[in-house]
Amino acid sequence: MTNPLREMDDEARGLIADLLTRTRHGALAVTDPEDNLPNISRIALARAPDGAPLSLISDLSQHATALKANPNAAILLGEPGSKGDPLTHPRLSLRVTARFIRHGSDDHAPLARHYLSQYPKAKLYIGFGDFALVHFTVRDGLLNGGFGKAYPVTSEDILTA
Image (cartoon, rainbow, N blue to C red; front, side):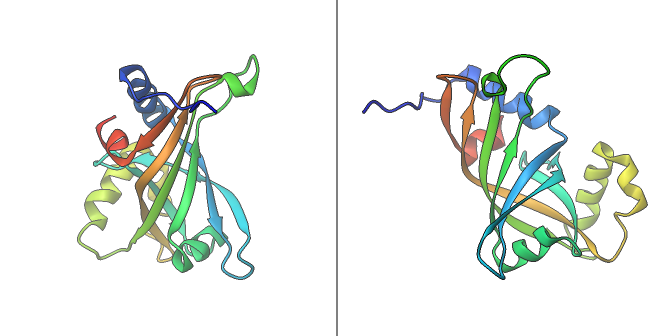
C-alpha cells in the first residue's frame, strides 16, 4: 500500500498557520480517569507566544480532572465551511501534553495578559481560583487539507507556523 501522507511543504505550513491563527476553539479529547474511556469537550483556544495552543480551563470541568490524571490529550482544530462536503475543509489534529499554569506561578501573569489580548471577556473569570491557564505542548499531529492532502505534523511545524 502506498503511503497516503505527503511531505510537509510551504503550502501545508501556511494552512497550519492559518488554522492556528483563526481558530478560536477546538475539540479536546481526553481519557476519563474513572473508566479509562475517551471524552471530548469544546474549549476556547488561543495561541501562546511560543505558537502552542493555550486555553483557560476550570478545575470544575471533567476535562481538567482528566488532564490532571493524564496530561496526554488530543486537540482537533478546524470547522467545516457552510457549503460543500465537510471532509473537504482543512483540519488539524494535534497530540499534546497539557501543563497547568496556576495563579502565582512565574509564567501566569504574562500568559494571562497574552490570553486576555485574544479573549478580553475572559477578564470576568480569569482571576477565579478554580481557573488555570493550560499550555498544550504539541508532540505531533496530522494536517488534513482535504481529500488527498494529508501531512504528518511535527512540534517544530507548529512552533514555526
